[in-house]
Length: 167
Image (cartoon, rainbow, N blue to C red; front, side, top):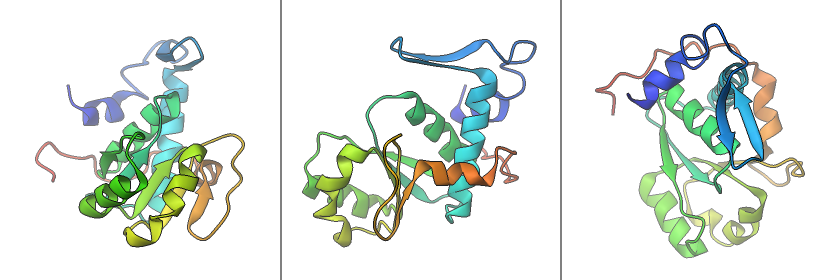
């Protein structure tokens, strides 16, 4: 099974007959059923496309493990972009190197990582930062809250599905 299979089927075959069945359960804190997983994945995918993320683009992800991380990972795969998973234990300088080396123009992160990255963000190709977090309301050029992605709806992104030989 590949991630593309999951992104293509999470809203249809995987949850067929029981879309309310648990699809994702994270450390007894949050649970998503198949319908909600597909909805959130689609919202994020549409929002990223609206930001200009295209198939083949690199999207940095600087987040701790959470349900949003999984939904984001599926969304990035659904549009054919590449997830660049970043270790939150890296120093700002090491993160800047990783972002530059991968060519990430979009970075998705949690609020606690905004301040450390502020020191080095100007030396990276990152132009847009999407901050995941209930309390975050957006601040600064190129910084948007994750809630802004949901404005683009939860319909299928309408992009060709990634193929196994895509690079």
